[in-house]
Image 1 (cartoon, rainbow, N blue to C red):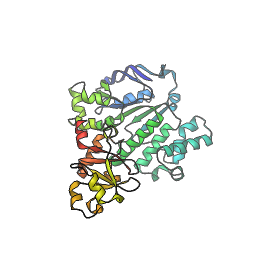
Image 2: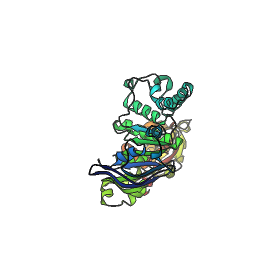
Image 3: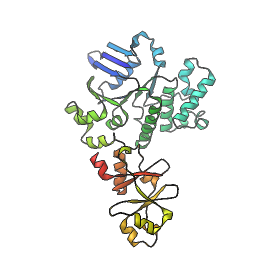
Image 4: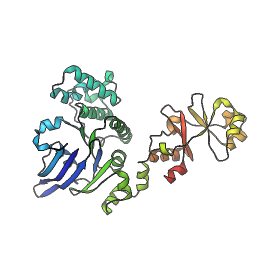
Length: 359
C-alpha cells in the first residue's frame, strides 16, 4: 500500500502540490490525470524521491520513504517514462539488466530474467537481446523501457506518460499489451497521463488533479456517472456515454449465434434461416466465412451464392473487446449483428447493436 498524507511541494512561492492525501491499495492501477501544471508528475516523482516533498508523509507498506536512502528506494520501485531513457551504448539485454546488476544478481539470473521479460512483452529474445536502442522502433523501445522497469521484480511501478510519444495505433496496441501484463503480474501502478481516454481505458481508479490539489479520486465509471464538479465534467468531455462503453466488455452481452456449416448446403440453410435473423456460415473448423439472409437464400441457386463474405480478423469482435470498439466495427461494416470470435476466428457468439444501446 502507498499512502500520501498532507503532501506538499513548494517551489518558492509556488505550490506545485498542495496538501495531497491519497491511498493506493496493493495491486491497484491508479491513473493520475489533469491539465498541464496540475502537479501530477511532481506527485509521481515524490514517491521515488526524484523530487523531495516540502512537507507531509509518504509511506509504502507503513514505512516512511524518508527512512530509505534515495538510491535504495529507487531500486525497489520500477520507473518508466515517455522518452524511454535507454542507454544508447548498451544492448537491449544490458539495458534491461541495469538494476539487477546493481543489486548484484549473477549473470545467469539476469539473462533468464531478461529473456522472461522480453517474451512477456512479445519481443523474441533471440532477435532483440543483442540489438541497440537505435535499431528499435518507438513501440519496441517502449516495450524495452517497461521491461527494464520490471527487471528487478518491483512491487511498485511508476509510469510517467510512457506511451505519450507514440503514434495512435502503436499506443493503443501497447496499452492492451500492458493491461495483459498487469493482469498477470498484479503490480501496484501509478500512471500519469494527460489523455482522459487512456485514463479511462487503463485505470482501476483515476485521480483528477487541478492546481496541485486532488479534485476527485474514484473508479472510472463513478467519475463518468458522478463527476465531482463542473471542472471534472468539462475535463471528461461531452462524450461520456462513449467513454462508458469503453469500460464495458463484449463478453457479457454476447449471445449464442445461429450457424450453418458451408458444407451443409442451400436447403439446410433455408430451413435454419429465420425472418430478420442472421445465419452465420462457418467452415468445418468453425471459422466464420460470412452470413446469409432469408432474402439472399431465396434468390440463390447454391449456398455460396447467398453468402456475404466476412473476414473474422477484420470484422470479428472478441469477447474481451470493449463496447466502444465493437460499436466502431459494427458501424464500419454496417452490422446490426456482429460475429463474436476467438483469436483464431472461430465463431463463439454474436453481439447485436440493440444490446450495445441498452448497455
